[in-house]
Structures are given as structure tokens and as C-alpha cells.
Image 1 (cartoon, rainbow, N blue to C red):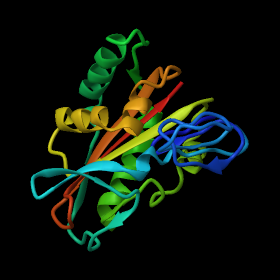
Image 2: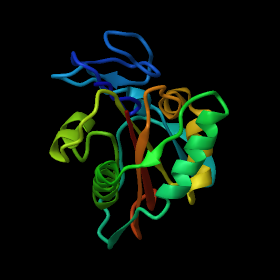
Image 3: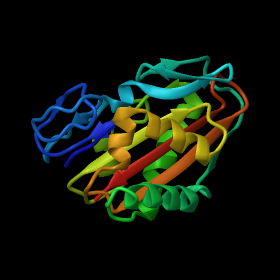
Image 4: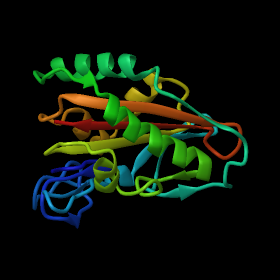
Length: 200
């Protein structure tokens, strides 16, 4: 299994900083794993976020004051995200993707934990391989993109396309399905946290 940017996984299990790592391989910005163990692309190690109205790339784990206000999650943007990812992939000769309810639960869980804790990280809700197992997701290849501070799906997609590691995940050849969610809080630094999980 291969998890990317945030996370990539196939079977082996070691961490690399490369944009879309494969098997023992070498793309940076990803952690990847082969089955028994996962690899997770640290493409999530540099994530695009807006600070004071400016785009910025930040380290993989950033904490702000814990969110003490209410946290709400929203998965309604999933169809729009799937359409945007499909159009982008098809313009490059790749397959369409569809929304997967279970991957959406994985994404929603991660977004909610980030919003609740005020921590922008692939690990705060559990490593992607762990979360995929918890939700009984069968896959050979999976990847995760995160964003914080963006106000809508279009902005999130623009940021991911502009980041080599995130972009590699959007264009992962094996991807056929995605989960997409956003969580919001009234407190903390970023207010909105976005998660996309892609899998074969």
C-alpha cells in the first residue's frame, strides 16, 4: 500500500521525504509503505496554508492554541472536489475518481481532530495507515493531502496543484476514489482544516 503527501503506503514501512514516494523509492514529500507497514509521504511535510491572507508553505506539524470553541465538519464539498480532481486528472490522461463514503469518514475524522486540537498534522488523528485500518479501508495505494486556512474547495485545489508533493497525490495513477472533508472552528489560527484521502 502506498500513502502519499501526507501519506503514501505500499508494503515496507519507512519514512522518506519525497514528493510521491513509491515502494522503496524516492519521491520526496511522502511517507510510503508497502503492505504490512505503510509509508507516508511527507509531501505533507510542506503544506500550503494561508497566513494573514498570504499563501505559505508550512512544516508538517503546526500547533496553535487548542480550539476551545465548537468544531463543525462538512463533507458536502466532496462531489465538487471529486469533479475538480477528475477534470484535472483527465486533462492529463488519468482516470476519474469518485467519492467513497468510507474514505470520507477517514478524512472527516482527521479534519475534526485537527480543528479540535488546533494542530495541522498528518499524525494528530493517527497515521494514515492506522486510520485506514480503523475504518477497514481495503487498498493497495493511498495518499492524503491536507490544507488549512483556505476558504473554499477551489482555493484548496489551487494550493495543492501548486505544491509538487500534493500535486503528485492528485495525479496518483492508481487513484479511483477519494474522501474529502472540512472542519471549522471559531478559535485557533487557521479556522478551517481540509483533508483529502485518495486510494485505488
